[in-house]
Length: 129
Length: 120
Length: 104
Image (tube, rainbow over all chains, first blue to last red; front, side, top):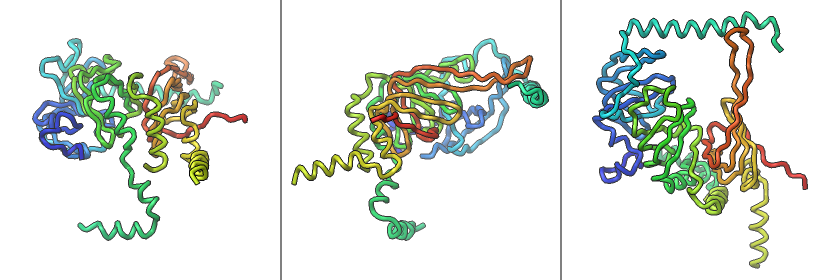
């Protein structure tokens, strides 16, 4: 209903119409961050992004991995934010790296986390309680 | 597709009162409440722990929310949100909304809740 | 006749026929709410609906987190408390609601 508001109500409703042709960041439920230009949407917050990319961030490093045209199912959308062109998208201390480098950094981060989990399992026999 | 047959079959299985209660899916009470808060500052805390403060721009029947002049509470943890000033939040991912205390009269809230509880 | 109708209305008000009636009786009282992701709330119930969306006042939130120590790999259980004056809680996160204890 209100998501299908006509032109007059766009600015007083939750309609995504005001975001059309704007550069957006879409946060997904699995934690991924997609960037792109909104070309279509519906009342379920299904959205179509043109020139989409995934912004992978690991610590101080980031990389925008190009994806092309994406249709995102509304269920998986957490938040849609308009990127203000006047402002920096990321803090100045962050470094843009290649896709290969960001994947390497992701892998290292994942392995460090897994190691912590497996060490904990190995120590369980000591019965901390 | 004609769904009216399906509706009729459902109606014959359950009594009218139940239909009114179950079909009243829109949380009318909270939808109305949030509409009253438009223009006020709120903090929306999401199920993924992201908390965003901003001016309530609009709300709809699913309790989707649009915020303006937003800032993320823990900015260092979410660098990708740095340049976001307007956003749409899907109602289903909201955990809390921290409300202004001068929002709506508490007696009115109580009355509206009792009315809603009676199936109104 | 009018008195009888008023009495019937009053009875309707206190009758407990379904689970949510217990919550109706807790309006304007302090309740305990257990939520998903190890969260607990205590606060005064100001509003609710059939999804258990709620508005609570003078809320105390307790979050329980389990961390693993970097060196000893021991589990560290932490509870974080905060107070929120006025809070909307989305019903889909609610596990249980406990009305105030009545001694009378």
